[in-house]
Amino acid sequence: MTPQVLYKCYDLKPFWFPDVIGRNDWGIYPLKGKLLNVRDASLKQITNNKEVQALKCILGLQDDKEYHSTNELRYGSIMIMTDQDLDSSHIKGLIINFFDHFYPSLLKQPGFLQEFITPIVKCTKNDKTISFFTLTEYKKWKRSNNDGRGWTIKYYKSLAHHTLNEIKEYGGDLGKYVKRFKPMDEEDRKLIEMVFAKKNANKCKIWIRRRCTLTIMIVRYPSKTSLRRSCCYSYFLIMQDQCHL
Image (cartoon, rainbow, N blue to C red; front, side):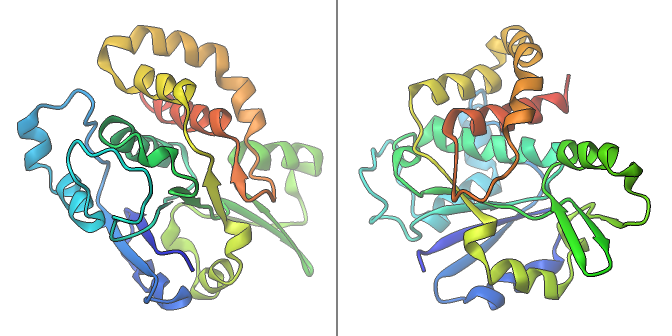
């Protein structure tokens, strides 16, 4: 198994996740709150930020270094694990922004950036269970199925609402629940810079209004092991900014 760093946001309960999938190859770092937006931060803010400095230490990141592989890092890739709501998309975007701003060469390495997805809603009827990874997809199903009548519906407000057996299920089928980001290109970098740089605030809002509906329809977490590059970055950037429009 390729070494990973698993980000866990908000909840402290699932710290035993490495016990499910093996501690020899996996590490876990609980990111409290939201990572600093380093793009417009001062040197003092970045130096004094505990999360930024911890991340650099955990991975063994070197300032101003261009990476051609992940062999020099203490871990070979980063996996982001958050809730599936809009606010968590902001967290994902800030993590991507950190690497794009300081270490863009790492985002070009295949498999370096990954995401662990979990259902936000599960609908159960008799022995049948349907899992939904976005509220948009769930609401569409609900409208087409008598408003969900006759189904037991469980909404997972946070990762802490998943049971130990569910975590074991997810950890036992990583091919289904782990999605890799394809290597970043210049188009992706322009999107991230537009969203997180304060100077582009007005331009970003116009872009979001034009792109929002289309992008939400694209991202449905299919069974593919890789996420489409530009659509995926666009989705996270749109979702994170919707929290603040």
